[in-house]
Amino acid sequence: MHLKYIKEIIKADVLAYEPGLELEINTAFGSDLMSDVLAYVEDDTLLITGLTNQQVIRTAEMLDLKAILFVRGKKPCNEMISLAEDKKILLMSTKESLFTVSGILYNNGLRGISI
Amino acid sequence: MNTYMKNESNVAMKLHYDISKDDFSRAGEASSKIKNMLRQLAIEANILRRIAIATYEAEINLVIHSLGGTIDVYIKPDCIEIYVEDVGPGIENIELAMTKGFSTATAVAREMGFGAGMGLPNMEKVSDEFIIESTIGVGTQIKMVVTY
Ligand SMILES: Nc1ncnc2c1ncn2[C@@H]1O[C@H](COP(=O)(O)OP(=O)(O)OP(=O)(O)O)[C@@H](O)[C@H]1O
Ligand SMILES: [Mg+2]
Image 1 (cartoon, rainbow over the protein chains, first blue to last red):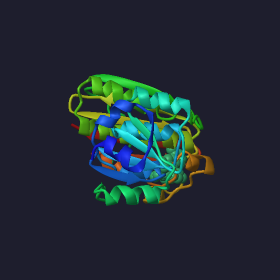
Image 2 (cartoon, rainbow over the protein chains, first blue to last red):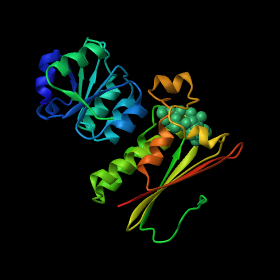
Image 3 (cartoon, rainbow over the protein chains, first blue to last red):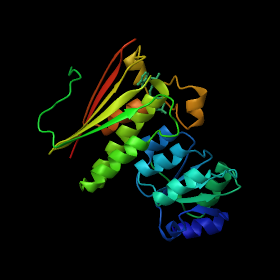
């Protein structure tokens, strides 16, 4: 699914690396536990999380993830934004909760990873 | 069972990083540097990912659980060897520590997104060879090998 399309259907704000909107992801994974993300997530997955600290960006970097969506209106700090720009990771934010945003994306055809 | 020992044969290049305890702001920097260095050596993406997961989980464990330690990466013609050593406090029950979901992570570590109890099992999963040894009051040593 096109990240630009995802941004539109959930009305997300773009916080870092806007060129990433042109890319596509195949699946999504929602979690605030970074080791679960590291254990289960494969390539081309959208990470959906309510956690906003440097380790989220580092985790995405380790897994070559292209995009992170922050829920519940969480906004990363400037340091995180510049690290994401540096690593070419698209950061978006939505006011919706993890559950709601996942439901909307699922309804639009996006699926989770297989565990 | 294999015992922890650095294998000095056929090392093409060595990388060394010191990891400080509780240094959350820099946690992940060593793994990032390792990943970038290995990428420049044109190591395949899938291998790179496994190494990145192994080093990052190890680095975070050093920051949140240990009194400080080191990560050494040996780049070899057929594999990458990762050696993780710390100066304590040691792990009392390794079998328990290796169990998915077991964690003694503090509230601070949990706020950072850690404490799922998945790090060690995941390090073992991504490694072709995994050795962990620990002595209470002395420290923990982990060897991980990822073969190309
Ligand atoms: N270097 C270490 N020194 C001392 N204890 C350790 C060390 N590494 C791991 N442990 C112990 O082993 C437990 C399990 O480690 P593991 O990495 O699997 O999970 P975690 O770090 O608690 O959570 P996660 O890795 O999922 O964020 C830890 O909670 C801790 O008690
Ligand atoms: Mg851990």
